[in-house]
Image 1 (tube, rainbow, N blue to C red):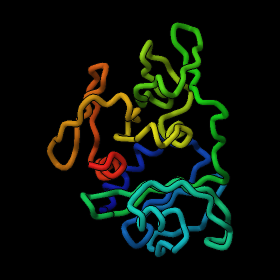
Image 2: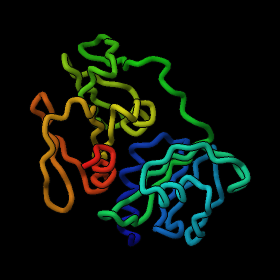
Image 3: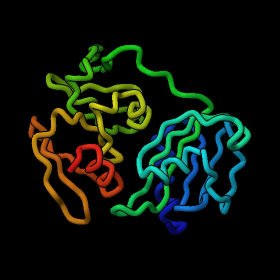
Image 4: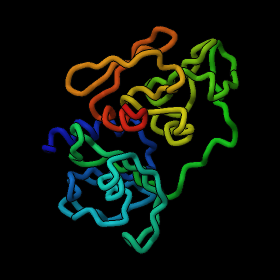
Amino acid sequence: MDQQTVLSIMEVIRDLVPKYTSIAVTNNQQYIYYQPSNQIDLKIKPGDRVREGTASHKALSFHQKVSDYIEKDVLGIPYFGMSVPILDGEKVRGCITAILPKKPLEFPTSFLTIKANDRWYPVSFKNVMFLEALSRKTNVHTEMMVGVHKLNLTELEFYLPSDMFIRCHRSYIINIHYIAEIHPESHSTFLLLMKDGTRIPVSQTYSSQFRKILHF
């Protein structure tokens, strides 16, 4: 990836992740960008090789999203890494890794509490059709209503059950049980027709992982 591509990616990421998150971007062998936070700094420098055992190395090796606690002996500081590969068809071009001082707290329940019409409503995961990025919050589309959750889409992604929800675009997470049809688009992308009639894109960044999860 060239520097302009990296900077464009970082403009998006800065709006999506909490301020206490360090961010690392790699190509398929080495780091090309690193932005430490005020809470955790792994002392990575552009040009450093991606070390085996890191979250970035696992994402590059497995060609899929990785969320894992990394022990101190790997980079000298323990951290929780959430890494997503950047895929070009079947080829891995690099990855983006969010680095946190500890694993985010998981939801203790199987529902989201959303706000609509100046009220709050608990909604079961199974009734959530899809989630849509809305500035630093999230629009939650359910069978009965649309409400707002205070967390952004990236924060919610790692709380939602992976056997039910899939990230298909930087702006969307969908519940696979509400997909009615999958339409092929150009450049290895797809268009989802949801059961309520909504059309949601599957971007090239997520298309390969999307196909692997749904086995087609």
